[in-house]
Amino acid sequence: MMTAYQGDVYQTQTGQWSWKITFKNIEVVSGSGYKTEDEAIDVMDAELVAYEESERRNHVQKMLVNFGLEGLKPSPEDELLHQAYIEGRATLTSAHNPTHAHLQTNLIGAEGLNRSSRVRLRRRIRGLTRNT
Image (cartoon, rainbow, N blue to C red; front, top):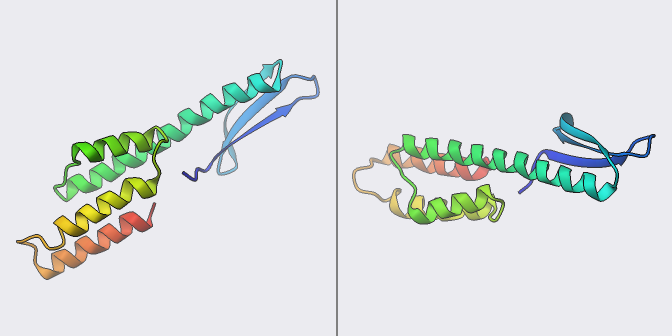
């Protein structure tokens, strides 16, 4: 996943090691006073994982709200894929492609949808895929 969070470890003039995490070039959290570079990297990496996981969790929640507005619920397989994405074990592409295929297969041709509803739904599906 491409993230806007970036981590940086550096040595201060006193010889101690510090780190900072930025989001779109704005510092969001930092730490200092570490004796070794490895210690600073380990702490920074743990913080970076937490920030990235939070970002992915928020993304899944937004996706589920959008699907809920359409009356859709995730399957157990979708829920496993969402959790893998949140944990960083799956990409947005892998999280969206099965959903996109499912929507195209099961909803676009669904009985009861008139042509204009199918067109709107196709646009939403394309937008969900394109906006990620």
